[in-house]
Length: 405
Ligand SMILES: Nc1ncnc2c1ncn2[C@@H]1O[C@H](COP(=O)(O)OP(=O)(O)OP(=O)(O)O)[C@@H](O)[C@H]1O
Ligand SMILES: [Mg+2]
Figure 1 (tube, rainbow, N blue to C red):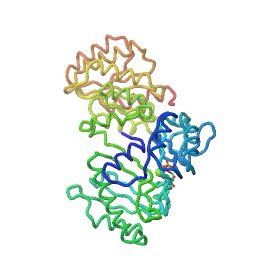
Figure 2: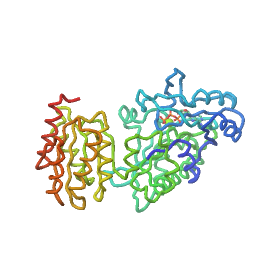
Figure 3: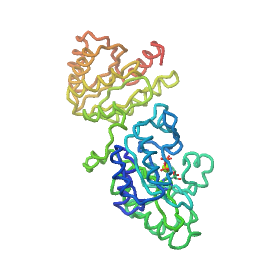
Figure 4: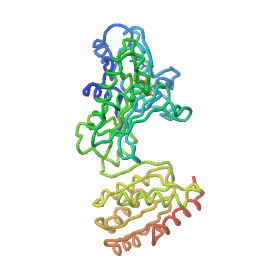
């Protein structure tokens, strides 16, 4: 789950990661109160959307820059009025862009140099990794590609936590000693707070780009990106208040509300599967058999072990409604899940919305005979598959026969 910069900065403040003073506003009336909290003088106006590259972005009406420097608060208010409600297109939003619904005003800092700093999970190493670079402000992917030697990484043993020597190692690797001992100490304090936030708030990514050294020698976070690990949602009731539904994939949101694990993908085969492991291997086998011919999964969907008939109906309807789906593969291994429940749900959804694309079904497990009977008697045009491989071959053939799109 993503949150906005202004929300991430509130977390930074809570843990003691220094940020310039700022305030968010959602309406022109709120601009006045938000600005009243800030000192007179240079102010940054920052569009709040869940995408990077805002500074270099352009609004759909031609207005340039989703992050702007203003000399005065009066100018900041005018700039904010141009951004609010306007649609910002950046390298990360896609051509449709994102509508700006919140503006963040913040004190403009006297920057000496911009750096990059992030903590994320290195799954291969099974531990958090700190990534830092002297090339802050620009796209880190470009730095990693063109000048990988300018990226420093430090792995942290989660049972020990971040050690002081590791923060110092990073500070020296970034060359911070040239600003004096106080800056090294500042960075060390920031690093400890930042790591504590990453762990305690169950983040999958915390990024500061740019982290800056000010003319005063202090180290401050000028931007903030925080992604939470959805698997920890059960212990964070407060995340609900941070969620911005306008920024989320509407189908994924609908699935979440129905208690389904759904992730939209780019392909053309709709998949209804029970169990995350089976869902993953279903994606794999479709790609294995079909990728060369342009047949790949349109979604990951795990209806779970104990899904009700209503949930199955909902899930199947979501797949039916997706315009990119050219064929549907139902792959169920009924353990706790009963095959007749799945069959009834699929038939109910197909009857309501109509079934315009080929449907391949592989059913095994509890109540399988009853499930097959329900499908056979439904009058729906269904191709039965005996194994996963058989199902994958049949679904790929169906999409290819329909002229792959
Ligand atoms: N408070 C500030 N004071 C001075 N300059 C700032 C401030 N905030 C941002 N900037 C400048 O604006 C640039 C872009 O801002 P920022 O990184 O927040 O947005 P962005 O372009 O969307 O970046 P990202 O792609 O990392 O999200 C920064 O690199 C920095 O030079
Ligand atoms: Mg940035």
